[in-house]
Amino acid sequence: MTRTTTPRLRTLVLLLIAVTGALLAGAGPAAAHAALTGSDPAQGVVVDKAPTQVSLTFSEKVAMNDDSLQVLDPKGTKVQVGSPFNVSGTTYAVKLKGGLAKGTYTVGYQVVSADSHPVAGAYTFSIGAPSQTVVSGIGTTAGDTAVGRLYSLGRYVSYAGFIVLTGGAAFVLACWQRGSGVRALQRLVVGGWLALTGATLWLLLLRGSYTSSGKFGDVFDLTLLGQVLQTKTGAALVSRLLLLAAAALFIAVLFGAYNRREEDEEKRDLTFGLAVGGVVVASGLAASWAMAEHASTGLQPGIAMPVDVLHLLAVAAWLGGVTALLVALYRAPADNPVEAAAVHRFSRLAFASVLALVATGTYQSWRQLGSWSAFTETRYGQLLLVKIALVALLVGVAWISRRWTGRLADPVGETGRTGQPAKEPVSAPASAGREAAPGDGKRAAQLARQRAAVDAALRKRQRDADPNRFGLRRSVLTEAAVAVVLLAVTTWLTQTEPGRTELDARAASSSSSSSAASSSGALTLDMPFDTGGTDGKGLVRIDFDPARVGGNEMHVYVQRPNGRAFDVPDVKVALTLETRRIGPLPVTPDHISTGHWAARGVQIPMAGDWKVAVTVRTSDIDQVTVSKNAQIG
Image 1: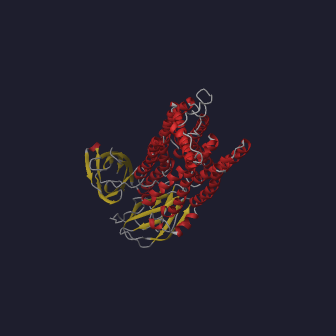
Image 2: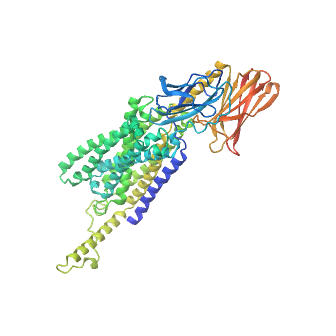
Image 3: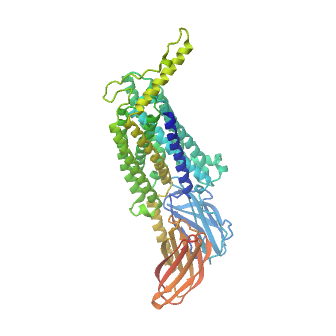
């Protein structure tokens, strides 16, 4: 049996590693959870006089250090003075040096949002007139580095450890108390505790570098570690470590004193005490995520945090229980197999967990998205659709498991198919059962071991002959495999900007740009595009200033769907006044900086409803032309 089941378990572990690696490799830059909703000077504007400060407004409060806001001149020299400061609410500013020269300046920011995730970005504005700039690499987060990817891996392992620890212990205590003496289940639960403890320490060490420089050399910087301990995330991680100490005591009692209890009354009392203590510790561990991430900020945090705790506990009871059941079905000894009653109890527990997941997940989805369109228009919504599909698949497989559970009989060797005691297993072969000579203790012990091995093999063969038990094994193995992928998608989802925040930021940014344009007499046009290739979606924004007959200054900005600058290979513009059959008049703007092109002296010969067509090329073969009409002149 071991020869056939071990490869399956090993395959599951390799699948877990492969899926995790693929998701982390393909994730790209870590998404922000606070978004830039406004700035002064605004993105892409040309101001006549040098400003005395630069201010940024975010969708929520953020944490800053001395280098969080940087302003660089066209040569890449810093021109800010002093440290950033809070102006009011969610607006932050930094003072600038006096006497700044004409040209294009780059503003870069790297802050930490209220839900603990690093936020970074950059934009440009010009004094007097646009110019070339040599700035590059500013506005990238530590999430884009190897430290960021290792931090994401640590988050995945911590979730997996919590699920295995909590769900495995719940399975033993609530479904199969005899399982407390099974070594494989003991190793599973202890392994979950070790994974969660190691991952928590790992996250604590990486946190300082993850939210600042992203360099490996800063991982063991005690100054950064001290700063982390003063943050909400640091407090949550330390609280988790303290609760893990209590969890270690719980595990010691569960697999020690509890397993040795023989009297029913004493065992019932200890079961009640362990259940209460386990729920308290598990809820505290779940709260260490809720108090520092999505649920702790935004809409209705007082409701969202308890709901998040309940959601995590339901996930652990279901998926962790599935893992424990899988181990019990494959690795429980022949003389102590998991009985049908225990599987039925877990089936009821899993059903209750699914109901809790549906209720809490529905609330979380509404809170994080806010509209149906966010499902398809935001990255968070798209990932959530993938998660919902995986949960539906998992529920379908679980339904198959419940059917096998309904047919399951207690294994042969405990009770027969009819409920009558099973026949005694066939004794060992005669050669193994031959009496040893008097005084030959070594030979007698050897024969006893042979008899035990033969009897155990026979009981295992009889137990595994049940087709219903075999079908249950296969369906539970499939559940565990789907759960591995689901956990990876969930981890990725927790690092993605909520759809509600992303849409609000887009609306605020569009409103800010329109206001800036109308106040200066300029014209702004936004046109989404899709070239059809890989990474081919985005938004192109065109500014005309002063948008009147004669010479105009044109700026073209290309952004990704998440609002970041999109450095496509080529952008071309054509102007057509169809009512007078003028044009198309081609305009080839110059590349200024990442995602920014500009052209000066663009001539508009007469006023009218001009068609502005923009051709965007995202690769050697993928390009598209989008257009919009605007009144110019």
